[in-house]
Amino acid sequence: MQTIAFYNLKGGVGKTATAVNLAWHAARWKHRTLLWDLDPQGAASYYLGVDGSTSYKAATLINGKQGIGRLKQETRWPGLHAIPSDVSLRNLDSKITEAGKARSQLRKLIEPLGESYSLVMLDCPPTLSPVAETIFAAADYLLVPVIPTHLSIRALEQVKTWLKEKKYDHLKVVPFYNMVDRRRLLHVEMLVKRPAVMRGGLKTWIPYSTHVEQMGDHRAPVGEFASHTPAARAYRHLWFELAEKLKL
Image 1: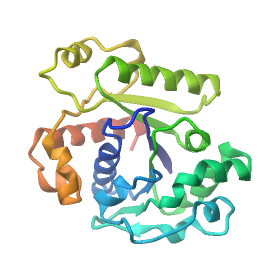
Image 2: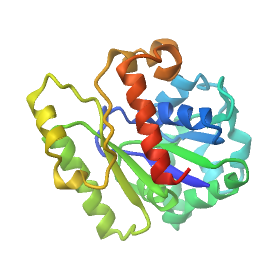
Image 3: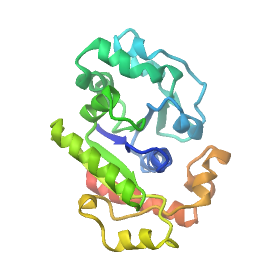
């Protein structure tokens, strides 16, 4: 089992849309996939149609009183399961701190999932906190969507610096450009001449697209309702590039 966390210190960069679309592609290519929506806002749960299908308390998960396997929900797509978000996740920071050993909490929870899934994907809240620490310790790869702007690049630099200081040496950080608008000169310039912090990332970039915004209308990945659009093709190419990196 490989664990992939979709994360950015900034919000509004298309993190959740990417997580949902790549999880959908993984399942289509016969990799049993679980997407855990760890963001209290629950956008991934909404896109996948599993919001409100279950309820749990973050504290009962952390202290081991509730098994994670009982929270799994089937989606409309074979091979793709999800653990919905819950409003109690807003208190996850404090519950992890109270339990102690923050780094190991999430890893211990998801380890048993390896018996059923080849991929576990985590849609993460935009924060540097005890929740982030336990996510980074549990993940093998950190996929970071980056809008081609100076502030978004700066946020990526901050995350990489923080990870180095905290010695998350096992974690492979994989940035990629998202929400690219080729009408903007800065976006084009950064595509052509990538900053050093983007090295080692994915070459595929996702365009800014109304079809991504329409995921909320259809409650489905882009490839499900607009399969021939540039956004759908970009997500497909992004998945193939990621799968090669994961050696799937």
